Length: 431
Image (cartoon, rainbow, N blue to C red; front, side, top):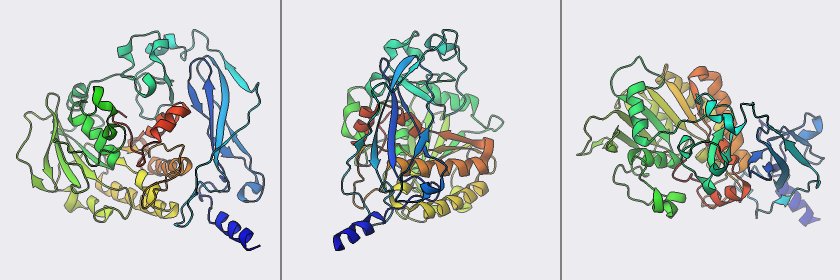
C-alpha cells in the first residue's frame, strides 16, 4: 500500500501547463513520404471534451495533415510521455528514463497525394513562386537531386544533403557579403532612416553562433571544419578572434562590411584597438540567458535608457528567448517575465520592427545537465507559442517570427535524433 501511494504521489507531481490543460500525453506523429522521404509533422490537439481536463481517463487527440507533394505518405509516431510527465517543472520531478512507446498504425493507413502539373505546388513551378516575405513560412526538406531546377537556386544543402523549400514562396540565396551589402542598400524595415544600419540583438548561445557565421562571412565551421564538435554543438570554450561572445562579455558592438566581415570594436564598454574601413552596418549584441536568474545581472536593466543610450539607435531588433526559459523557469513565472519584457520593448523601441527568434526544437531524449535543463518538445513549443501570441498582440505588423523550430521539426525523425545528441540543444553552425 505504501509503495502504491508513493507511486501515485510521484505521478501527480507532473501537471499540465495552464495554456493546454488537456495535454496529458506527449506524442510525436509524422507522415513520411515513401518515395521522397519528406516528413510532415502532425500537430495533435486535445479534443474539446470535459474529460480531457482529468488525469485518470482516456485521452483523445486530433490533428490535421496538410500534404502538398505527390507521394504515398505513411503514418508513424511514438508516445514520449504519459500523465503529463513531459512537463517536469517541479525540482523533484524528472523522468527516470526516456522510453518512448511506438504507436501501432494499421498497415493500410496510408495517404496518397497527387499534385497536378499546373499546381503552384508542383516542383516544376517552384521557381515561379514569389520571393518569401516572411520568416515563418511552412515547408519541407527535399533531396536536391529530385528538383527540376539548378542547385544554386535553392541554397546550400544541409542535414543529410537536403534543402529547405517553402510551399508558397521561394527563398533567394545570398552570400554573407551580399547580405551585409543588402543591409546598407535597402535598410530593411527602416528605409527612410539615415546613418549606419544598426541591429540590436538580444540572444543566447544560438545567437552567438549565428553572429560567428555573419562576422566571418560564412567561413566559421565551413567545409571540412563543419564536423568539429564546436560546430555541431557546443562552442562555449572556443576562442574566436573577431569577438568574445562568452559569458564574461555581455555587451558587444560589432562593425561589419562586405569585404572584411565583422569585428568587435567595444566589449563590456572597453574600446578595442581595431576596426574595419567603410563599415556598412553594426550590431549591438547583448548575450543573455533569456528571462532567467542566470544572467549576470537583472535582465530588465539592459533596456534602461542609460544602458541602451551607450549604443547607436536601432533600426531593427532581434529577440531570442525560450531556450533558457524552458530549461530553468516555470511556465507561469515565464509568462510574467514575458509580459514585463513586452512593456520594456514598447518603451525602448516604439517604431522599430522586431524579429522574434523561437526556441530551438527539442526531441528524442530526456533532460540533462546540472542543474537539469528541463527542455522537452511540448514545453519548447508551448513556451514559444505563448511568446508568439503575446508579441503578435502587442507589436502587430512590426513583428517577424524567425521560426527555427518549425524548420527543424520537419526533418526526418532519424535526423532529429542526430541533432538531439547536443546536450545543450544548440543549433548547428549554419541554421
